[in-house]
Amino acid sequence: MKHLKVKKSGEPAGISTKALRLIPDTEPVTSEAVARRLAEDSLIRASLEGDRDRVKILLEIGVDSNGRERFRGSSPLTVACLAGQFEIAQDLLAHGAVVDLADNDGRTPLMEAALAGHRELVMLLLELGASLHSRNRFGTTPLLASCIAGHADIAEILVDRGADVNEFNRFGRTALMEAALAGCAATIRFLLSRGAHINAKSAEGRNALMMAAAVGNLDMVQVLVCAGAETSAVDRDGNTALRIARSMDRTDVSEFLSACERERRPRYGSAA
Image 1: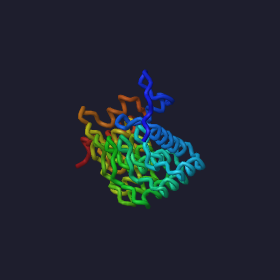
Image 2: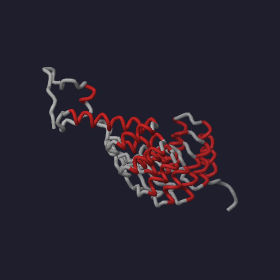
Image 3: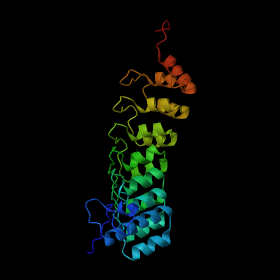
């Protein structure tokens, strides 16, 4: 393999600084290495942008379907799934793309498809054996990703396939809590119907009701209260959902939770 001559500046002759950044520090700087990395970078861009013709050409000439861009470590399949490029994802998988290849932060193609709400891609990846239990560096799973973005239909697919409705990330936030933060009442209703623990608490001691109160979605707060959420629960700082709503000027939510508190108080002087 022919190594390139290096200029006095330290840059190989005929190769730009931008191209050099594509080569890992541990890899010899050769003309072949630069060409390979440029081709892999081109495949990633084409997969993201939906340029199927270019993707097919690059795959047919042998460009690695599992090549990863240097900084995030994203693969062509990962970016195709994020962008909703279903046919390109099929092409990549047909040419050996690894269905669960994670990027540098642990994000898999299934996580990205779930986060972006691409139903067909989620189903395709699951049919090909994508893991429901993969986690990124924050502990996010495909189910948690779908709830973060408020995709109730994706959450249903994942739970039906075996995802744990009560799984949580490294911060202790469950799918129900993520749905509350996303402000998605439809996702909350679905998760509760499948047995989500309504009063579970995160690492900071907050339950889904507190998070819904912070967001200020009255419909979501009402759903949780009607389903049995504890309005008197407190977080690590001693805040109830009502106190959180008041501190964030969530007027409608504050009024509703205040009414719940009045109803909960014993009525002294009433007949025994």
